[in-house]
Length: 513
Image 1 (cartoon, rainbow, N blue to C red):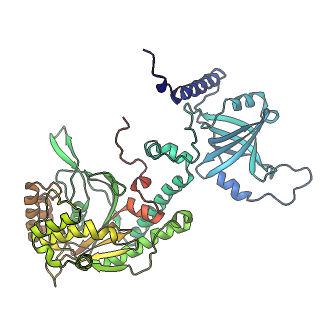
Image 2 (cartoon, rainbow, N blue to C red):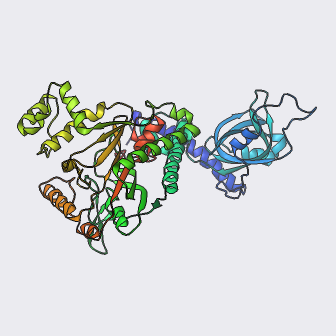
Image 3 (cartoon, helix red, strand yellow):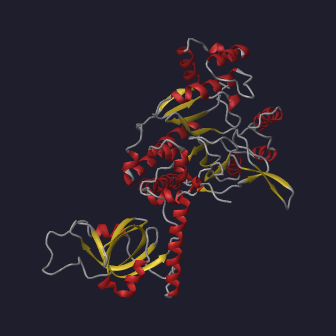
């Protein structure tokens, strides 16, 4: 059947380009040249050459053309190619940056120049040559040898320099990394941030550990888990929503300072703030309180920020906040009360469920599927829906959460209805959740029972009863405090980007079809 003319689009031109590339691939093989070679040894990166020869010398010895007599071995992806018949300039991109090479027929010989004629943008190429500056002042290697190391069979997309199509960028991150230097820097900055956090904890005597990612009972957070199945044991398992309960078992065992950096999985929606698979850093410290961890939080965020400042100042310049210490502190009650007063309401609105539901409707918000049944739950709903987005860009600690919504936290001795807990907000988003740990097994068991009842009533985010964890507490967990931070969100804020998808190499997307 004849295709609709509108279907015969750029596909055909890409097919033609791929046919040309495959033809060159076969020509290389026929000439005995391996188009996927792995025996070329690079000895110099582009950045090293630019550091060694930062500017053209004011004067060169009479008759001198090269900057020194050494031959340098470079390799990278061809990102630009300008041919002038018997000579050509190519730009090679490696992990450190870009370097230009110059290919002349009378230098590389007929065979070498034939190899060059098979090169196209996107190929990986190796070259051996000596450095000089062109008339326009660009550092360049004039190569005596050129080799194709990987023949790219697909062309880079049109206008790949500065690729901006979000759909392509996220689905084909490799093209994004090739075309956008700032994206490469963003993921390098992510590594620098993680290294700074690890260094801080290692220096403070914390031990990095690994706990199960597949758990028979999901726990440690209020979230809906992903379910999988172990065939050999005929057992349903859950991808972890948090490592908390296993890390606290290690406190029982005598490992007094532990941390884990790893992936968590929550079966929730996708947005600029959420990805179902994300990276969390959690640590637990025996004989510490939540107030001790507020100090650590300031120190760790500041250290990570300085690492970005030092290595990637262009990214840190995009921040919308400062990190002056101490960070602002505000109780949850104060924050909600201030908001209600701005709407001519008082906290007593939280006492009446029907009145609260009516007011919520007036504000254009629908009641959740499982509406809060207590004033504490209603307070949290107002905070999350109305107060949190308006907290502003600066860091702020929110303190004194109701114990009812803090099922793993220690009670405040002076105010038993409150938890010894804080959350750090940055840019109006929760970044850190931390608290003094509940180590009373009877209190924890009762809270688990209440969570299990809510779960049985249909709340899929409520916690299950973890009997083994209660047994661990009965063996005696030392007084302690615990802390969790979303790494993806931290990278977002410290590098000045607005979507979590920007800082996850391969974010979850709907199938392209």
